[in-house]
Image (cartoon, one colour):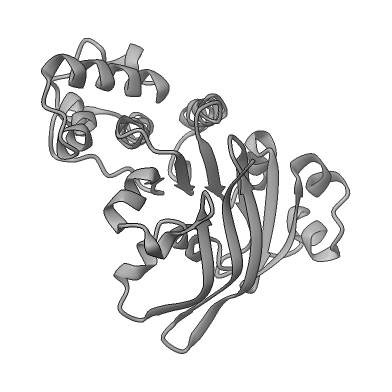
Length: 248
């Protein structure tokens, strides 16, 4: 089942032409890894899926993104960003307790029942592979957590509002290998309930967790296929060159 579709997606920041006619389908309950060198359009593409680029006054686009066959530009932006959540490269916990970080979005969307909030917080922390590490210190400041724990807290905060799609933009770029493994484990488990799009500069990570992988270069989608095929027998020699580290 197709969850997201990109139709001839083009974008500009001022006079800079960034995305050049990207056509793509993203399936429900898959992890789509998006790889490519810097300035290939990966993050711009990701942020077009929930209209975060709209915050930049120099951004303009052509083409269309559809979520469940509906143009995302016809969806109320607050509703869209609840349905399509995002986890950024650097963890950005709120200056609140661990509990209140996760509860923040739940309360913002109108849930005030303390028992229901507590249950949702616990479930989100479990899904983010963090519950066992923090269940006895929920009232502590989120800033006391390690970098890897803060990133998993941000994942839990995103999950707490029950999105349908989770966008990950280099979520492990600043993490050690053990923390990276925990985030990857969480992603693999989460695809049972969510659709995941992962932008990563780590081709090994893309190979480990992606069901399919998309390779971007110069604002174009060069190749999209099952991950094992991309990494063993890509159609395009540029894909092979990037994976082998010949450029990027």
